[in-house]
Length: 319
Image (cartoon, rainbow, N blue to C red):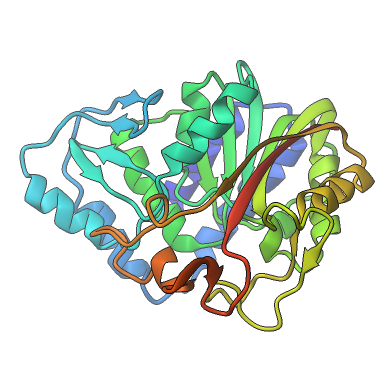
């Protein structure tokens, strides 16, 4: 518990007058204290096995470099592999490069020209291990609060923090539905790869709107239907690309209508890109099946269920 208080205590100190942030930190500390995940002892042991290193962070590059290089690269690799699978990256920890499932740097490259984060307080919903938070800090953000209910990703963030030191990028074991509904004036809220997992996408967008200050920005990245299906809405019968929890995929026009109905203005689609198995794939650091196994081998424009293959759009809008 003392470790958790120290971690999120430092977060509280970065925005001292925010009642919202104080409540969020208290929720996160309780969640970590009471969590009973069966793999937690193994993950904690992996963190304890990480070698001592001089902390540091070079962030504004495709694979953020955290910490100085350590001499025992084999031991470092073994410890970090205990936190498999690593999905978002690439990352360089203690001189060891983690070739993660996603080339998240490609997504960031498509997004970065369209945003200005200098001096901003940012919330990243569904942040995973905090990779994008590192890139946000590298782009000038003052503070990044990431939330993700998957405990493994919090452990991966703790590993990154071991090497980076106390930079203002945090990952808290929470979902958006757990955030307190009290006033908060965030500059930007990111929701990347989350909307299609929500049973009520309209409510998700409304909730994001409520978290922003007047004139604040939402950065929304989500699955959309391909060109020619802009006004359509796909509701999968069971699985989509082997995922069980995909509830709805809109065309871009349909998506823009949802965003407008949630109260946003100045709405712009800044990128639409099909996802390929070069961007999302199996690696040594994510050894399970990935996108290639979710596509029809005879027609990669379709999933194995016969549905349109993944296409992702980035939408930026103002509150």
